[in-house]
Length: 540
Ligand SMILES: Nc1ncnc2c1ncn2[C@@H]1O[C@H](COP(=O)(O)OP(=O)(O)OP(=O)(O)O)[C@@H](O)[C@H]1O
Ligand SMILES: [Mg+2]
Image (cartoon, rainbow, N blue to C red):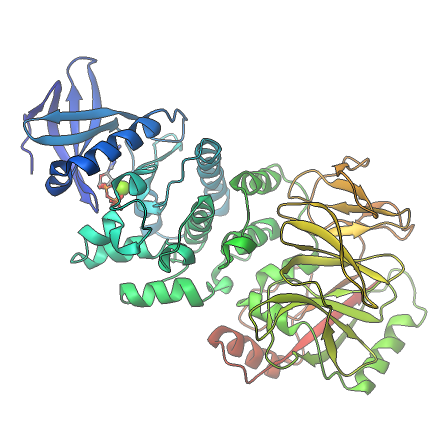
């Protein structure tokens, strides 16, 4: 512990600020430049290790080159009297952890904070720097609501052998193994790949960003256990409690959280810039995405719940009843809702995408994960009792959508937009894609899809995507009845809301709440017993 007045080169310690996993932090005065700085004193055993220090100095150089208004700047490294300290920009104001301790942060304050976090991450990621320890305690919010991220890249710079990404060599984890609070505070934001000691990349920051945004909005950690082991187990296995999100959380925010908190980094949002674009859309007041997406994101445990949205064993009578209601003539404006019960095929789980009904109303498509752990596109004809997977669709994710003739489906897998004939045959790759928030297939042979920004357009036979001629922005495009122009239709297909979820304004709660609750609870607990759930269709 350094006393006030202690001199480190031209820096004079004023007062301690706090101590964390990596050492003590002091407020100090820079006598040369006449400004206040923060000194992070490096652990003694670390400073004595010449190899480690040499590597740290190399890393620190890269970190010191980061120059962004939302990242606390590293000014330099001071070595004086056997003490080594990192000299950093002093950031006033509480940390986000202090703010959240007082309760959830209202949406209109939380989103601008989240957006600034995205900007900082985007800037650093573009320069190849990953934070690796993003958490509310490492984010400060200054009195004028500017965000400053602390400790950028320090976790990597301070870690042990760089060849091993072992969780035990994480500076916080290894040093603070005896200080359960700090250790617990770090474990809760680790991505599943970090928790499993696998190599990490910027997608770990995207995960942590999802955890931070969830916590801002709910006041509760997304993953939490009584012990570090429990916490890491929750990170690896459990879903956040989506029902804690405020009822006014926009669809885009719910979808964004789901994409950030995908356990499999390959299925996760690929670029934090896409998160910034989504937040910009919300902040600019763009109309919210459609109801099917809303229900996908708003149901608690919805990643597994949507699962249920799929398949198998619809009694033939129910299908016939549905078909009758769906096809009979009706006045254009009168919305009609049809509900029926289906359950998942054996040993499959739901991946998180909404089921998609073919335009002719006869076939459901849904993405399910099978017993081999692989996700695939499954097809369930409504006049059949079984669903079947389409071969060649391994790794399918996102929201599949149909061709206007109901013969083909477009879907995303392995970073590509593909189409496949429902009657069989291999899928055809159309183009490379990142995150795709839904798409639509027009009768003039174009496919529109939303990469979370302005709509892109591609020929149904593939090629290079270009900006959609409509110039529209937004997720989950739909096609107007003319078959060509994007718009908002009133037909939706999705799950009924389990009772614990706040109802989405466009949905009415399920009448059959008995088994619906059972399904929701089963999905939350991971039990495979209650496999039924309700599907609704609303048409106009
Ligand atoms: N540049 C800074 N300006 C102002 N306060 C800072 C600065 N850097 C750290 N602090 C504060 O000093 C205290 C200790 O920070 P430290 O980073 O060591 O711990 P931590 O963030 O809790 O955990 P970790 O070691 O995992 O980052 C915290 O209260 C933090 O907000
Ligand atoms: Mg810190």
